[in-house]
Length: 221
Image (cartoon, rainbow, N blue to C red):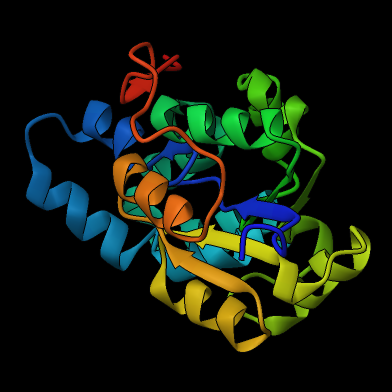
């Protein structure tokens, strides 16, 4: 199978980059984890954030949410104004895999649900993104994973064949969507498991990560 695989595509958040709104909201809520989790489940929900990733303007989305929850206006506005504080470091174990694959001659890409408003500032914080052959984010397309539209656009834009492309994501629904289109889809658990999975496909990776590949580095304050 190794000779058939020509490209490997990575999700970003949770796979290569430690993005998590809790990095910000733990500063805001302090030790009250229950209140923080309630806010993220009821107010700035994953579904609300998914619409931002799909291209909805931050200003419009925040204003609508503030109108619905005026008592939590400051917390909602922080989602936009302090968004960079949701970024942690890079998952260096995965970055090491990315670089090994590139060194072996495979093309590497990113396909991620990410707002077009926040991605430019994000990109400048993680130099390895500029080493990739191409990046497609949902904010550019106007639709996010697991919609098959974004996967088809990804394959079309970079002239890739599904059967020759590995796709790596930490969400099972996205893995299932990629697999349904014929991509070789892998559920990301951690870098060690990913390395084993890719070696199982015959890709030229070392059995173990380089010693310098720590879990997370390069945190953003």
